[in-house]
Length: 296
Ligand code: CAA
Image (tube, rainbow, N blue to C red):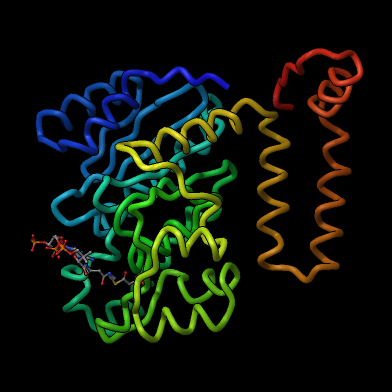
C-alpha cells in the first residue's frame, strides 16, 4: 500500500539523527498543533491517518524509564486508546536507544520498604491493558526495562542495530518488569535462563530467529519507524471492533489453556456476528467491492 507520511514523521526521522533542542521544540509544536498534548519525556505525533506515534525522549539518559516518563507514557496511551481517530499506536525511542532500562540512578537508593509499599513498577503493566494494538519500533539498546517494555507491546519490529538484553543480574537484581515471564513464552526456558543469569545481550538477528520480534527491517535511518507506521496504518484501516477482538484472542493464549483459549476465540468470533462490520465485510466480499467499516 502507498503511505503518505505527514510532516511530523519526516521530522521524527530527522530527530533520530539530530535531537537538538530546537528540533525537539519544533516537533513538539507540530505535535501540539495536531491537538496532541505536550509532555516532558515523550513526544506524541500523528504520522499517518489513524496512527499515533509515541517517541521516548530522554536522549541524554538513553531513554531510561524514569517514573515521570512512565507516568506520561501511561497517560498518553490511555488517552490515545480512548481516541476514536486512532486505530493503532507505534512506540519508539531514538536510533541509539529504544530504552536502556529502568532509571538506575532513580532506583539505586530505594529500600525494600520504598519499592514494596509503593508497588514500584506495578503501573508499568497498564500498557498491556490497551484495547488498541501497539507496535514497538526498536533501534539501538532495548535493555532491562527497555526490553520488557518492547515485550509488553503487541508486535515488535527491530532495526538491524537493535540490541536486546536483560542485564539486571549485573546490578545485583533480576528483571522486574516481566522479562523472565514474557521472554519464556517467546524463546523457551533454556534461553531465558541463560539471558537472565548471564546478562548477555542478544542481537536483532537472534531476536528474529527466536521469534522475539516479528521481523528485522532493512538498514536505514528511521526505517523501523517508517515500517511500523506502515503496519499500524494497515491495522488502522480495518474494523476497530474486529481488531480489538483479534488482539484479545491472541493475548488470551498467554493466560489460558489451549482448550480455554480455543473456546474464548470461538466465542469472540461468534460475538462478531452481532456487528455491522461482519455484515459489511462479508457482503462486500460477495459483491466484489471494498468494505466500508463503521466500527460497530
Ligand atoms: N538508567 C539511568 N541512566 C542510564 C541508564 C539507565 N538504565 N542507561 C544509560 N544511562 C545514562 C548513563 O548513565 C549516561 O549518563 P551520563 O552521561 O550522565 O553519565 C548516559 O545514559 C549514556 O550512557 P553511557 O555513557 O553508559 O553510554 P554507552 O554507550 O557507553 O553505554 C549502555 C550504553 C550499554 C546501554 C550503558 O549505558 C548501560 O549499560 N546502561 C544500563 C543498562 C542496564 O543495566 N539496564 C537495566 C536497568 S535495571 C532494569 O531495567 C530493571 C527492570 O527490570 C525494570
